[in-house]
Structure formats: C-alpha cells, structure tokens
Image 1 (cartoon, one colour):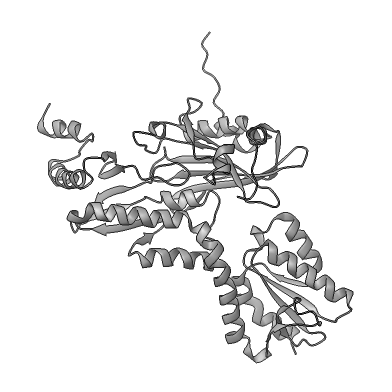
Image 2 (image 1 turned 180 degrees about the vertical axis):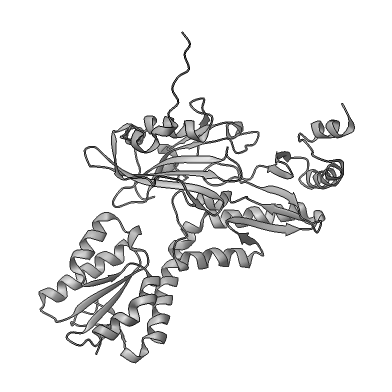
Length: 273
Length: 159
C-alpha cells in the first residue's frame, strides 16, 4: 500500500491527488486535534469531505457539514443545500417576510447562501470554531418555524402598516377603527369608499381569520354598510375550513402581502373615494 | 404541541387507507439544491388530512427523504414517518449511515420532542425510487401507481 493509501486508511477517506492529500491531511489533523479526536471525516465526493460529529438536528438527524478547499486556500464549510431541503419538509420560505428572517439569521452570523447552499469560509486555523459557528446557524435556520411565530407575526403587521401608511396615505386610512361601541371589534384600517367604507384587515393566521369572520358577520348583523378587504400573509397556509369560512364572508381578499403591495393601489383607485 | 396522541392512534394514522386529494406534480421540481414534490391526502372516511413530501438532494442522490405528515384541523402538524436515505451518523446513531425510517412516538410528543426523532435502519429500500414505492405501500395510499408507477421494479425471477 503506498503512502497516500496508508494515510487514506488512517483518516478513513480516499484522495484524488498528492497535493490535495498533503493539504487536506494538514487540515484534518488540525480539525481532529481541535475536536479532541472526536470527529470522523469521509470523502463524500471528489474534493468534498463530510464531517461526522455529534451535532444533531431536533429531528434526530445529524447536521450535514461538508468541507471543501477554495481557490484562495480557505476552507468552505457548507451544507450543500441540506438544511433548506430539510426545512422544506414542513415549512416553505415562500413569503418576503420569511425570507427576510432567513437572511437576517445568516447576516447576523456572517454566513452566506448561494442557490440554496449555506456556507461559511474560514482560514484553516479556524476550522473548529468555524464548524461550531456554522452548526449554530444551521440550528437557527432549521428552527426558523419557531422564530417565525414570534418574528414573522410582528413583521407581517409591521410591513403591512408601513405599506399602508407610506403608499396609501392619499386615501387617508384610519387605523384601528371601531365601527360599533364595543371596542373589541377593531378594523385594522378604514378607507372611505365610493359607495361604502372599506374595512381592511391584515390576516396572519387562523386566529385572525376567525376574528375577522366574526367581526364582519357582526357588522352585517348590525346593518353597518361596509366592504371588507382581507390581506393575508399566506392564504394557502390557512387550514381548509378557515379558508372556506373567510372566503364566504369577506368581500375581497389579497392572498399575500406581496399581492396587496402589487395590486392594492389599483384596487383602491377603483374602490376608494 | 398542545395535544398528546396515543401510539395506537399514530400507528393507525400511518396504516389507514388514504386517497389522493391534491395530486403530485408530474415531475420533481428543482428548488435550490434539491428536487421536491408534494401532494395532499385524506383518509377514505374523510376524517383525517395528510400531506406527503418527497425531497432529494441534487448533489448527493443518496440524501433523500419521503415523509407523511398528519394535518389536524386545530393543532400543529405531526410527521408520522420519514423514509430517509443514508446521510451520515455518529457512534450512537449508526443507522443514519444506512437507509432508515423515522416514526412518530407518543413519548416524544409527551416530552415535547420532535415526534419522529427516533429511527431504525431498514432494508425495505436502497434508492430514492425504491423508497417511493415502499413508502406508498407502507402508508396505504390508494392510486399512487398513477403518479409513481414508473418506479415499480418487476421482480427478476428466472424460475
């Protein structure tokens, strides 16, 4: 067995060239030493090393971490798209709000993303700390669904408010309007319409969808003239029953904030006074 | 996860006959660094709603996952089972180095853990295409052949 293969058997990997062998052996030695020899590395594909370390996702699978050398001699720590693939099992980054939170996590941690591949480039002397930092970011991204409940909920209403107050100011929107004495029946924005006032509601989730339905039915029962407009964060994400109920009650719906930002102005030009 | 679910109930959700409500796309769709497909199901008695996801990495064909998710009307979704390819494990989880199946457990839900955290190695399949066929049968999905019949391999029997 030649030297290259002996080393390959020690480090449990196969190599493709002697130059690569020597460089990567140095990096691997550094990493194993820094990890206190509790890490295994295997060549997943030509030039791509997979790191096997006790770093896990909440669903029990090991965190996918790969190492590759860059042309500048740095080490690229990446996931080869595995994190976003895993996230997509039950959560899609399909709205601007969600993408904003995702980008925020990466930016705050100095990590980058390219075509679904999350990566972090470090000097060889920083492989260990780089992997630790990287795995934390992967964990945060993987748990974006939890972050979403807190951050996205606020972001959606915040962005909607900003848009209405900046872009639709000429329609004189009245915020938190109460058409009846009971203050719990709050319309997010009232805009005077050509025929009837327009009541705009931001709908983030099931709970708000049901509230809007109750409000509108109450206003109808009390014979208040109005046209209801629902602006959803993500209409498709609502359970089927909630989608059906709100659709049967509300006069006009925008299925996403992006859709409202795109066509809300034109709609109000036609409907508002 | 507000509710708790008995193990029998979880196992039954996997086994109950299901029909396809919203069919899958004809071809897997490229998204970033993976291919994906999704479709929706309901139990034949229309009592339970489900979704299925299929994912495969474009860089590593052996990194794939096919999952059945239970979608209750008033609670968070639960991944009932996930058929995974080999993607790397550690000393205490060597089954991740081979094809393995994650199954939802009552005890995980009660402890607030990811329901399908545990997994066992399997010999039901070795490739993504094999896994699709086995998954459809395992989850008792009626009519799957119309969409995934091209993955059926006839047994080679020279007797």
